[in-house]
Image: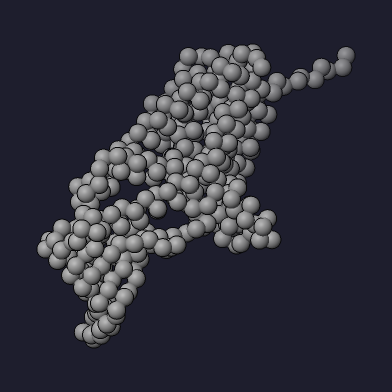
Length: 362
């Protein structure tokens, strides 16, 4: 491969990587601050905080990568414009090399996003949900102190009377006031945190379950043993989406064994694949906007970064308003960007073609 495409591709990739690294670092810090209650309230260590923040990054990386790619390509081309290298590329008819470098950078970014969406994001979703369930079980089973009221989740207060040496809890009481329609109270003489095939459970013995509606209606159910999922009490994981936690290769393997994909699996694969088209569309459109030199000297000009962000918001809005049936609606906004980018490239390349003057006959 010639040197010019490699030089330009490295330039595009470098600007994209620098911007993406800064964005991810800031998002990581924000995520750490958002879940700091793991350390401050729930008694976990700093490694748990960092691990939970890391597992929450893949969805954020997918959302921000295509914007960083578009801005990175635009900034690199703007730098070539300022150094007059872009003028030299066009004057020497090396636009194919420029287009080749753009396609290399955009293709590599699309491939990386496909790996993130189809493999890393589902694995991260599964691990963070399982870890959150383990944290919730640890909070209920270990960090509760006797005769001390602890809010294990917003609106859920737990207090215990004591703790035996084998981990058994005595005089368990929990008040769940999260729902405005119904307030629940769990009372048990003994409680133990265990685990079954569905996850962590709180095994209550010799107790009663009390309900109080918003209109003041009261009911009570006594039980000898009642197994309750810890997630239901702590609100750590609600309605886990098993498809979202399964990587695409595993979905395809299950489909071959079961004779076909479920509608939820088909929609998940479509939406994961649409992220790559989003990268291609915005990357090509950013290139079409900034890859051609100009001599404008106007001071009042929309910054390129803001223009790329507006295009990203526009694409997201199209996905919601275009009347496209599911699951094809995930591609609607990206296809519009891609078509606009192709039209701009064709139009601008046609303008650069030298005009052939017809020689008049003698």
